[in-house]
Length: 405
Image (cartoon, rainbow, N blue to C red; front, side):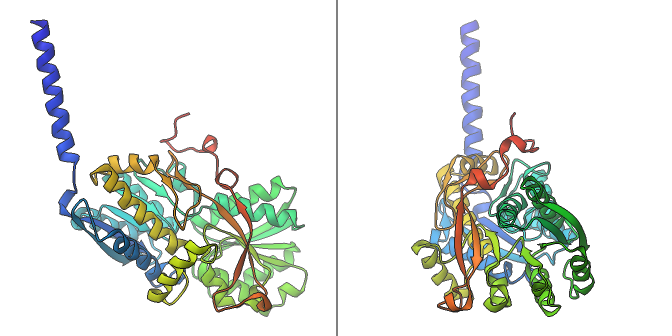
Protein backbone atom coordinates (compact mmCIF):
# COMPACT_ATOMS: atom_id res chain seq x y z
CA UNK A 1 0.00 0.00 0.00
CA UNK A 2 2.82 2.37 0.96
CA UNK A 3 4.63 1.54 -2.30
CA UNK A 4 1.42 2.17 -4.31
CA UNK A 5 0.86 5.54 -2.63
CA UNK A 6 4.49 6.55 -3.27
CA UNK A 7 4.03 5.79 -6.97
CA UNK A 8 0.82 7.84 -7.06
CA UNK A 9 2.59 10.78 -5.44
CA UNK A 10 5.53 10.45 -7.83
CA UNK A 11 3.27 10.32 -10.88
CA UNK A 12 1.30 13.32 -9.63
CA UNK A 13 4.55 15.25 -9.13
CA UNK A 14 5.67 14.45 -12.66
CA UNK A 15 2.30 15.54 -14.08
CA UNK A 16 2.43 18.77 -12.07
CA UNK A 17 6.00 19.49 -13.13
CA UNK A 18 5.21 18.70 -16.77
CA UNK A 19 2.20 20.97 -16.64
CA UNK A 20 4.25 23.79 -15.10
CA UNK A 21 6.91 23.38 -17.78
CA UNK A 22 4.26 23.41 -20.48
CA UNK A 23 2.85 26.65 -19.14
CA UNK A 24 6.31 28.21 -18.91
CA UNK A 25 7.51 27.03 -22.32
CA UNK A 26 7.30 29.24 -25.39
CA UNK A 27 6.31 32.89 -25.66
CA UNK A 28 3.48 34.35 -23.60
CA UNK A 29 0.82 36.32 -25.50
CA UNK A 30 2.35 35.19 -28.79
CA UNK A 31 4.84 38.09 -28.93
CA UNK A 32 7.93 39.35 -27.11
CA UNK A 33 7.38 43.04 -26.51
CA UNK A 34 10.16 45.41 -25.45
CA UNK A 35 9.48 48.92 -24.18
CA UNK A 36 12.02 51.75 -24.46
CA UNK A 37 11.17 54.27 -21.75
CA UNK A 38 13.58 57.20 -21.72
CA UNK A 39 14.02 60.97 -22.02
CA UNK A 40 12.93 61.68 -25.59
CA UNK A 41 12.70 65.47 -25.38
CA UNK A 42 14.54 66.85 -22.36
CA UNK A 43 17.99 67.47 -20.94
CA UNK A 44 19.14 63.86 -21.53
CA UNK A 45 17.50 63.24 -24.89
CA UNK A 46 20.66 63.62 -26.99
CA UNK A 47 22.67 61.05 -25.05
CA UNK A 48 19.69 58.66 -24.85
CA UNK A 49 16.32 59.43 -26.39
CA UNK A 50 15.54 58.24 -29.89
CA UNK A 51 19.07 56.88 -30.19
CA UNK A 52 18.37 54.39 -27.41
CA UNK A 53 15.33 53.12 -29.29
CA UNK A 54 17.44 52.90 -32.44
CA UNK A 55 19.89 50.66 -30.56
CA UNK A 56 17.08 48.38 -29.39
CA UNK A 57 15.53 48.18 -32.86
CA UNK A 58 18.91 47.36 -34.39
CA UNK A 59 19.34 44.48 -31.94
CA UNK A 60 15.89 43.10 -32.75
CA UNK A 61 16.60 43.28 -36.49
CA UNK A 62 20.04 41.68 -36.09
CA UNK A 63 18.48 38.89 -34.00
CA UNK A 64 16.14 38.16 -36.88
CA UNK A 65 12.92 39.80 -35.73
CA UNK A 66 11.56 36.66 -34.09
CA UNK A 67 12.41 34.44 -31.14
CA UNK A 68 11.06 30.92 -30.54
CA UNK A 69 9.02 31.41 -33.67
CA UNK A 70 7.21 34.49 -32.38
CA UNK A 71 7.59 38.17 -33.40
CA UNK A 72 9.52 40.73 -31.39
CA UNK A 73 8.00 44.20 -31.09
CA UNK A 74 9.53 47.46 -29.84
CA UNK A 75 7.55 50.40 -28.47
CA UNK A 76 8.89 53.66 -27.05
CA UNK A 77 7.76 56.53 -24.85
CA UNK A 78 9.04 59.75 -23.27
CA UNK A 79 9.04 59.76 -19.45
CA UNK A 80 9.89 63.50 -19.46
CA UNK A 81 12.25 62.92 -16.50
CA UNK A 82 9.23 62.61 -14.21
CA UNK A 83 8.91 59.55 -12.00
CA UNK A 84 5.10 59.66 -11.90
CA UNK A 85 4.88 59.71 -15.70
CA UNK A 86 7.42 56.89 -15.96
CA UNK A 87 5.55 54.76 -13.44
CA UNK A 88 2.16 55.38 -15.08
CA UNK A 89 3.50 54.51 -18.54
CA UNK A 90 5.21 51.36 -17.25
CA UNK A 91 2.01 50.26 -15.52
CA UNK A 92 0.05 50.80 -18.74
CA UNK A 93 2.65 48.83 -20.68
CA UNK A 94 2.72 45.94 -18.22
CA UNK A 95 -1.05 45.71 -17.73
CA UNK A 96 -2.44 46.61 -21.15
CA UNK A 97 0.37 46.31 -23.69
CA UNK A 98 1.78 43.11 -22.14
CA UNK A 99 5.34 44.46 -22.34
CA UNK A 100 7.85 41.81 -21.27
CA UNK A 101 10.93 43.98 -20.68
CA UNK A 102 11.57 47.70 -20.26
CA UNK A 103 14.95 49.22 -21.04
CA UNK A 104 16.50 52.71 -21.24
CA UNK A 105 15.14 54.30 -18.03
CA UNK A 106 17.43 57.30 -18.33
CA UNK A 107 16.95 59.23 -15.03
CA UNK A 108 17.41 57.57 -11.62
CA UNK A 109 14.12 58.78 -10.18
CA UNK A 110 12.23 57.29 -13.12
CA UNK A 111 14.28 54.10 -13.05
CA UNK A 112 13.66 53.54 -9.33
CA UNK A 113 9.91 53.95 -9.80
CA UNK A 114 9.72 51.62 -12.81
CA UNK A 115 12.07 49.05 -11.29
CA UNK A 116 9.89 48.84 -8.18
CA UNK A 117 6.80 48.32 -10.33
CA UNK A 118 8.62 45.70 -12.39
CA UNK A 119 9.40 43.80 -9.20
CA UNK A 120 5.75 43.88 -8.17
CA UNK A 121 4.53 42.81 -11.62
CA UNK A 122 7.32 40.26 -12.12
CA UNK A 123 8.55 41.96 -15.29
CA UNK A 124 12.18 42.48 -16.27
CA UNK A 125 13.80 45.92 -16.32
CA UNK A 126 17.20 46.37 -17.97
CA UNK A 127 18.31 49.88 -17.04
CA UNK A 128 20.96 51.29 -19.39
CA UNK A 129 20.75 54.99 -18.58
CA UNK A 130 20.16 55.66 -14.88
CA UNK A 131 23.12 55.61 -12.52
CA UNK A 132 22.16 55.58 -8.83
CA UNK A 133 23.67 52.68 -6.87
CA UNK A 134 20.38 52.39 -4.99
CA UNK A 135 19.18 50.44 -8.04
CA UNK A 136 21.42 47.51 -7.10
CA UNK A 137 21.24 48.01 -3.35
CA UNK A 138 18.04 48.36 -1.32
CA UNK A 139 15.87 48.99 -4.41
CA UNK A 140 16.98 45.82 -6.25
CA UNK A 141 14.39 43.21 -7.26
CA UNK A 142 14.62 39.66 -8.64
CA UNK A 143 13.76 41.14 -12.06
CA UNK A 144 16.06 44.19 -12.24
CA UNK A 145 19.32 44.57 -14.16
CA UNK A 146 21.60 47.63 -14.03
CA UNK A 147 23.52 47.32 -17.27
CA UNK A 148 25.91 50.11 -18.31
CA UNK A 149 27.37 52.24 -15.50
CA UNK A 150 26.64 53.48 -12.00
CA UNK A 151 27.69 56.26 -9.66
CA UNK A 152 30.08 53.99 -7.76
CA UNK A 153 32.17 53.20 -10.86
CA UNK A 154 32.00 56.78 -12.14
CA UNK A 155 32.99 58.26 -8.80
CA UNK A 156 35.72 55.75 -8.12
CA UNK A 157 37.53 55.74 -11.46
CA UNK A 158 37.34 59.50 -12.06
CA UNK A 159 37.75 60.55 -8.43
CA UNK A 160 40.85 58.43 -7.93
CA UNK A 161 42.44 59.60 -11.18
CA UNK A 162 41.89 63.30 -10.43
CA UNK A 163 43.19 63.05 -6.85
CA UNK A 164 46.26 61.12 -8.02
CA UNK A 165 46.92 63.95 -10.49
CA UNK A 166 46.92 66.52 -7.69
CA UNK A 167 43.25 67.55 -7.51
CA UNK A 168 42.93 67.38 -3.73
CA UNK A 169 40.21 69.91 -2.87
CA UNK A 170 36.70 69.61 -4.33
CA UNK A 171 33.42 71.50 -4.56
CA UNK A 172 30.36 69.86 -6.13
CA UNK A 173 27.63 71.19 -8.40
CA UNK A 174 25.01 68.50 -7.97
CA UNK A 175 21.74 67.71 -9.74
CA UNK A 176 19.15 67.72 -6.99
CA UNK A 177 17.65 64.25 -7.27
CA UNK A 178 18.63 60.61 -6.65
CA UNK A 179 21.29 60.44 -9.38
CA UNK A 180 23.17 63.60 -8.40
CA UNK A 181 23.06 62.81 -4.70
CA UNK A 182 24.42 59.30 -5.32
CA UNK A 183 27.16 60.55 -7.63
CA UNK A 184 28.33 63.18 -5.14
CA UNK A 185 28.24 60.68 -2.27
CA UNK A 186 30.25 58.02 -4.11
CA UNK A 187 32.81 60.45 -5.51
CA UNK A 188 33.28 62.02 -2.08
CA UNK A 189 34.15 58.63 -0.62
CA UNK A 190 36.98 58.04 -3.09
CA UNK A 191 38.26 61.60 -3.00
CA UNK A 192 38.61 61.38 0.78
CA UNK A 193 40.12 57.89 0.59
CA UNK A 194 42.82 59.32 -1.69
CA UNK A 195 43.69 62.08 0.75
CA UNK A 196 41.49 64.78 -0.76
CA UNK A 197 38.92 66.97 0.97
CA UNK A 198 35.50 68.38 0.18
CA UNK A 199 35.09 72.13 0.63
CA UNK A 200 31.37 72.21 -0.08
CA UNK A 201 28.57 71.58 -2.54
CA UNK A 202 25.48 73.19 -3.99
CA UNK A 203 22.46 71.48 -5.51
CA UNK A 204 20.63 72.68 -8.60
CA UNK A 205 17.31 71.65 -10.20
CA UNK A 206 17.27 69.35 -13.20
CA UNK A 207 17.37 71.24 -16.51
CA UNK A 208 18.97 74.38 -15.08
CA UNK A 209 19.59 77.09 -17.67
CA UNK A 210 21.50 79.59 -15.53
CA UNK A 211 24.40 78.25 -13.46
CA UNK A 212 25.86 81.65 -12.56
CA UNK A 213 24.97 81.63 -8.84
CA UNK A 214 26.14 78.02 -8.43
CA UNK A 215 29.41 78.69 -10.23
CA UNK A 216 30.07 81.75 -8.10
CA UNK A 217 29.69 79.62 -4.98
CA UNK A 218 32.08 77.07 -6.41
CA UNK A 219 34.54 79.79 -7.36
CA UNK A 220 34.45 81.41 -3.93
CA UNK A 221 35.16 78.05 -2.27
CA UNK A 222 38.70 78.12 -3.63
CA UNK A 223 38.52 74.41 -4.47
CA UNK A 224 40.94 73.12 -7.07
CA UNK A 225 38.25 70.88 -8.58
CA UNK A 226 34.65 71.73 -9.36
CA UNK A 227 32.99 68.35 -9.62
CA UNK A 228 29.91 68.28 -11.84
CA UNK A 229 27.58 65.67 -10.37
CA UNK A 230 25.07 66.10 -13.18
CA UNK A 231 24.75 65.04 -16.82
CA UNK A 232 23.65 65.92 -20.33
CA UNK A 233 22.50 69.49 -20.93
CA UNK A 234 23.13 70.42 -17.30
CA UNK A 235 26.79 69.45 -17.61
CA UNK A 236 27.36 71.20 -20.93
CA UNK A 237 25.58 74.37 -19.74
CA UNK A 238 27.68 74.47 -16.58
CA UNK A 239 30.93 74.01 -18.51
CA UNK A 240 30.07 76.62 -21.14
CA UNK A 241 29.08 79.19 -18.51
CA UNK A 242 32.16 78.46 -16.41
CA UNK A 243 34.29 79.20 -19.44
CA UNK A 244 32.42 82.48 -19.98
CA UNK A 245 33.24 83.41 -16.36
CA UNK A 246 36.89 82.54 -16.94
CA UNK A 247 36.92 80.03 -14.11
CA UNK A 248 39.29 77.76 -16.02
CA UNK A 249 41.81 80.59 -16.18
CA UNK A 250 41.77 81.17 -12.42
CA UNK A 251 43.28 77.91 -11.28
CA UNK A 252 40.10 75.85 -10.94
CA UNK A 253 39.33 72.77 -13.02
CA UNK A 254 35.90 71.46 -13.92
CA UNK A 255 35.53 67.68 -13.79
CA UNK A 256 32.48 66.09 -15.41
CA UNK A 257 31.55 62.97 -13.47
CA UNK A 258 29.17 61.65 -16.14
CA UNK A 259 30.13 62.67 -19.67
CA UNK A 260 28.98 61.34 -23.04
CA UNK A 261 30.41 61.68 -26.54
CA UNK A 262 27.46 63.91 -27.40
CA UNK A 263 28.43 66.31 -24.61
CA UNK A 264 31.96 66.66 -26.00
CA UNK A 265 30.53 67.16 -29.48
CA UNK A 266 28.33 69.96 -28.11
CA UNK A 267 31.16 71.63 -26.21
CA UNK A 268 33.81 71.31 -28.93
CA UNK A 269 37.38 70.15 -28.43
CA UNK A 270 38.70 73.65 -27.87
CA UNK A 271 36.56 73.88 -24.73
CA UNK A 272 36.69 70.28 -23.50
CA UNK A 273 40.28 69.30 -24.41
CA UNK A 274 42.19 67.50 -21.68
CA UNK A 275 39.10 66.68 -19.60
CA UNK A 276 39.15 63.21 -18.08
CA UNK A 277 36.07 61.15 -17.22
CA UNK A 278 34.81 57.57 -16.99
CA UNK A 279 32.82 55.69 -19.61
CA UNK A 280 31.48 52.20 -20.14
CA UNK A 281 31.94 52.32 -23.92
CA UNK A 282 33.65 54.23 -26.70
CA UNK A 283 32.69 53.82 -30.34
CA UNK A 284 36.31 53.93 -31.57
CA UNK A 285 37.74 51.36 -29.14
CA UNK A 286 38.28 48.57 -31.65
CA UNK A 287 37.03 47.13 -34.94
CA UNK A 288 33.85 45.67 -33.42
CA UNK A 289 32.82 48.98 -31.85
CA UNK A 290 33.60 50.86 -35.06
CA UNK A 291 31.57 48.41 -37.16
CA UNK A 292 28.54 48.85 -34.88
CA UNK A 293 29.00 52.63 -34.75
CA UNK A 294 29.11 52.89 -38.54
CA UNK A 295 25.77 51.08 -38.83
CA UNK A 296 24.25 53.13 -36.00
CA UNK A 297 25.45 56.38 -37.55
CA UNK A 298 23.80 55.49 -40.86
CA UNK A 299 20.46 55.47 -39.04
CA UNK A 300 20.85 58.09 -36.29
CA UNK A 301 23.45 60.46 -37.86
CA UNK A 302 25.50 60.47 -34.65
CA UNK A 303 27.91 58.02 -33.04
CA UNK A 304 26.40 55.87 -30.28
CA UNK A 305 26.75 56.86 -26.64
CA UNK A 306 27.27 54.21 -23.97
CA UNK A 307 23.55 54.32 -23.16
CA UNK A 308 22.55 53.73 -26.78
CA UNK A 309 25.14 51.00 -27.37
CA UNK A 310 24.26 49.46 -24.01
CA UNK A 311 20.59 49.28 -24.98
CA UNK A 312 21.54 47.25 -28.08
CA UNK A 313 23.64 44.87 -25.97
CA UNK A 314 21.01 44.51 -23.24
CA UNK A 315 18.30 43.73 -25.80
CA UNK A 316 20.44 41.26 -27.73
CA UNK A 317 21.41 39.34 -24.59
CA UNK A 318 17.81 39.36 -23.34
CA UNK A 319 16.71 37.76 -26.60
CA UNK A 320 19.56 35.24 -26.47
CA UNK A 321 18.44 34.29 -22.95
CA UNK A 322 14.85 33.72 -24.13
CA UNK A 323 16.07 31.51 -26.98
CA UNK A 324 18.37 29.52 -24.71
CA UNK A 325 15.68 29.14 -22.04
CA UNK A 326 12.96 28.17 -24.50
CA UNK A 327 10.56 30.59 -22.83
CA UNK A 328 10.03 34.26 -22.06
CA UNK A 329 9.01 33.43 -18.47
CA UNK A 330 10.76 36.21 -16.47
CA UNK A 331 12.06 33.95 -13.68
CA UNK A 332 13.60 31.50 -16.14
CA UNK A 333 15.01 34.27 -18.34
CA UNK A 334 16.56 36.09 -15.37
CA UNK A 335 18.23 32.87 -14.23
CA UNK A 336 19.59 32.36 -17.73
CA UNK A 337 20.85 35.96 -17.98
CA UNK A 338 22.70 35.64 -14.67
CA UNK A 339 24.35 32.41 -15.85
CA UNK A 340 25.60 33.90 -19.13
CA UNK A 341 28.94 35.52 -19.89
CA UNK A 342 28.25 38.85 -21.58
CA UNK A 343 30.78 39.29 -24.37
CA UNK A 344 30.07 41.49 -27.37
CA UNK A 345 31.19 44.77 -28.94
CA UNK A 346 29.82 46.65 -25.94
CA UNK A 347 30.83 44.57 -22.94
CA UNK A 348 34.23 43.09 -22.18
CA UNK A 349 34.38 40.67 -19.22
CA UNK A 350 30.63 41.13 -18.67
CA UNK A 351 28.63 39.24 -16.05
CA UNK A 352 25.27 39.92 -14.38
CA UNK A 353 25.65 39.44 -10.63
CA UNK A 354 23.07 38.39 -8.02
CA UNK A 355 22.27 42.06 -7.29
CA UNK A 356 21.48 42.69 -10.96
CA UNK A 357 24.63 44.71 -11.57
CA UNK A 358 26.17 43.89 -14.95
CA UNK A 359 29.88 44.31 -14.33
CA UNK A 360 32.29 44.81 -17.21
CA UNK A 361 35.42 46.74 -18.18
CA UNK A 362 35.19 50.51 -17.69
CA UNK A 363 37.43 53.16 -19.25
CA UNK A 364 39.14 56.33 -18.07
CA UNK A 365 38.82 58.65 -21.06
CA UNK A 366 40.53 61.90 -22.04
CA UNK A 367 39.26 64.47 -24.50
CA UNK A 368 41.62 65.01 -27.42
CA UNK A 369 43.19 68.31 -28.35
CA UNK A 370 41.88 69.80 -31.59
CA UNK A 371 45.16 69.00 -33.35
CA UNK A 372 44.84 65.31 -32.39
CA UNK A 373 41.38 64.86 -33.91
CA UNK A 374 41.11 63.36 -37.38
CA UNK A 375 37.36 63.62 -37.84
CA UNK A 376 34.04 64.96 -36.60
CA UNK A 377 33.58 62.23 -33.98
CA UNK A 378 37.27 61.58 -33.26
CA UNK A 379 36.95 63.12 -29.81
CA UNK A 380 38.41 60.83 -27.16
CA UNK A 381 41.20 58.49 -26.25
CA UNK A 382 41.25 55.69 -23.72
CA UNK A 383 43.77 56.45 -20.97
CA UNK A 384 43.16 53.36 -18.86
CA UNK A 385 41.06 50.20 -18.92
CA UNK A 386 39.64 49.34 -15.50
CA UNK A 387 38.59 45.77 -14.71
CA UNK A 388 35.13 44.99 -13.29
CA UNK A 389 36.62 44.12 -9.91
CA UNK A 390 38.39 47.48 -9.73
CA UNK A 391 35.49 49.57 -11.07
CA UNK A 392 32.27 48.35 -9.45
CA UNK A 393 31.05 48.03 -5.88
CA UNK A 394 31.94 44.59 -4.50
CA UNK A 395 29.05 42.30 -3.63
CA UNK A 396 30.30 42.25 -0.04
CA UNK A 397 29.15 45.88 0.25
CA UNK A 398 25.77 45.32 -1.37
CA UNK A 399 22.53 45.75 0.56
CA UNK A 400 20.48 44.00 -2.13
CA UNK A 401 18.08 41.39 -0.78
CA UNK A 402 19.05 39.04 -3.63
CA UNK A 403 22.64 38.75 -2.39
CA UNK A 404 23.24 35.84 -0.04
CA UNK A 405 25.77 36.57 2.68
